[in-house]
Length: 534
Image (cartoon, rainbow, N blue to C red):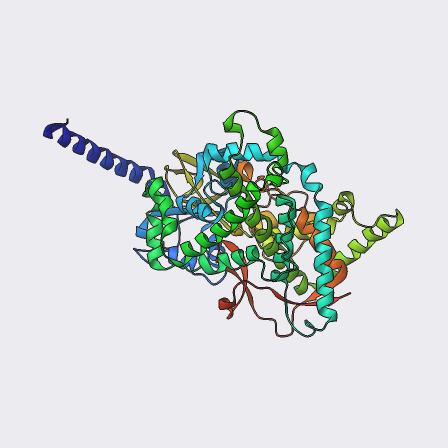
């Protein structure tokens, strides 16, 4: 039992350690405080309300990047310093060279848990992420992904037939068609068959329960957080993990929506796991994982982990693809001359397919469509679906810079010391539009840049043509064949145009860059385009 003297000593020791930590953090952060950045509009909320309430993704970041360079200082809640980073060498160091020494922020981790489950690949970090990713890798080889092309094509062709029927029946003549809603249903069917070996029936059933569970989840839950929410989230990094996990039970709009959605998805996934007929093949992509599993529990996925991965596949496999496809069709509708060039290339390859007596495109045929591939890359660059990552260093670091910045003393610096625990906001949207990398027309739709430029920048960052849209390094996403399979089918059969009364489409900052009609935010995500059969 501790004496009073011992108790006082412990209190003074803890207090002393706390003071030393504060002094050390303040001293270590002196280099950050020397960086330039926009003046803080609020002592209490810093720039957080300004960032989360901007009308369209990237507007403020673009302005600040022009003024301060590719790295600048900002203020979080309670005036805590953080950095916004778009410099390629710094991004490479954070996401590739140092990998797991930069962990996801507490808010990212908790929201990931609420969306994909406690063990979802998006939510886990560090050694857990590395272990699950290693187990899953055999299911995501290039050959495995390419083997899904016929399945992607069948779903795309079904979508085309349904569009044709709607147009011939007159239900869409002279009206705007929400291509996002249709493509979301198509991609849900695709991921259901690829990942679960089941037919979700989303294209046949407009009130599909899985589709309804996900509908507008981001648009209704994430954007425009209240001031109370911003302040509350600012203390999440300091909460014990067990306490942080209880946040999902709070009776607020976002947590209620996430909880209800995840309950439905996990219930669906759990029923598949429990079915005896699917006991071994519950996930088509997990088949190779099961076969690869060793007797060591560390090298196997538990049922709970499998359910979380299934939830992750459902979301990542259809939500990101449908959003990207919608932005792609939007840009093609605005650039009919490029749409015509795509159609010309697809028809030329179609002619070669017919000459050899085949009925549909092979993987080699898809690879030969260079303009189609370049167009997909351009849309991923111009409209990155995940536009911002948050990383936190677990140790003191020194960030190298490709493009030196000028600090408040007028000094030019090419590296920045940062203390552990500093929030680093990685602006993918800004990086993907840097003129230093992509040219003077970086803010314009120009797919030919991927055909004429041999190298995009001096520092390699992204996994696809130096793009940061799906991350980089150890935690990058993989697989874009589905987008090409759907795009080729739709461009071959339909022409896309902007309606005469085309409203303004903005990228809602909702975690994903969600297309929203300005003035119709209450409707949720949508992409209205004019679709005409060829």
